[in-house]
Image (cartoon, rainbow, N blue to C red; front, side, top):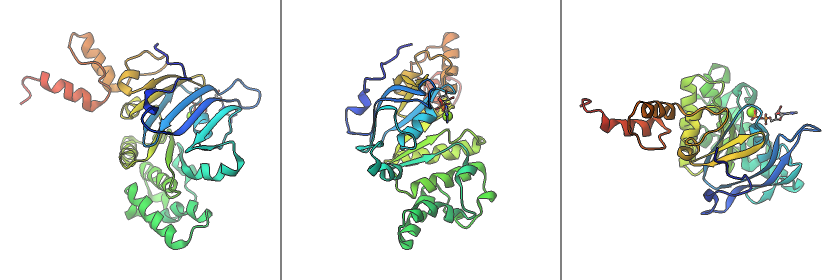
Length: 289
Ligand code: ADP
Ligand code: MG
C-alpha cells in the first residue's frame, strides 16, 4: 500500500483556504484505544470528499468531531476557521456543519414533512416568514417540494432521507457531513440520495460522504481511506483505487476493468466509475452500431 502520512495535507488544499482543517486530531472514548489517532486532514470549500474504511475505523467518530458533538482529546478541529473546542463557537459550528445519519427514521421528528424541515430554524428563533422561505428552498433542493404536507410515514426510505437532508439544509450549513446516508436504502433510494448529493455539490456545497459503497466513493472528487483511526490514503478515486487497501473492495466498475485486463484487454488505468468504464469499452465494441 502506498500510504501518505496523514500529517501531510494533500494537494487538494493548495488552491483554496480550508473550510475543514483537522490538525493532528486524536480522540479516545474513555480509557479505550483512540478511535481517531493523529489525524490531519484539510478540505477546501466546495470539495466533495468520500471517507471509506472498515467498520470501527473511526469514520463516525470523525463525523462527530467535525461538528463538535465530540471534542478532540488532543489536536484541533477548525470548521470555517472556528475551533470546535471553543465553547463560544459551539453553536455556530453546529449550524455550519449539517449532519445526516444512516437511519432516516431517527432523524425525522415531526409528523408533517414541512414541520420537520422547519424544526431546526425554529429552534434558532428565526422569524416565520424566513423559516418558510428556508423550508421551501430546502425541500426544492432535495426534490421533495410536492411532499411538504405529507406524513413522513408515507414516504419511501430514499424520500425520508431526502427530507432529513432538507432538514440539515434548512440550517444553511456550509458543510454537509453524511454518515452512511444510503446504508438503509434500497437501490432506488440510494440513487435518489446520490443524485441530491451530486446536485448540492454542483451548487457549491462542501460535502463529506462517509460510505460503505465504493461506487459512491468513486464519484467523489477525493477519497480518504481510514484504517484504525488514521487516514492511510487520500487522493482522487482513480488513484486511491489503483492502490491496495486491506479490507477494502474496489468499486464494481474497477473490478470489471481489472477482470478484463486479466483477460488481456488493454484498458487505460484508473477506470472507477461505470461511466468511465463504458466510455473506455465503447470504442472496442466493433459490432455495436
Ligand atoms: P466506524 O464509523 O468507522 O465504524 P466508529 O467511529 O463508529 O467507526 O468507531 C471507532 C472505534 O470507536 C471503534 O473501536 C468503536 O468500537 C469505538 N466506539 C465508537 N463509538 C463508541 C462509543 N460511543 N463508546 C465507546 N467506544 C466507541
Ligand atoms: Mg460508522
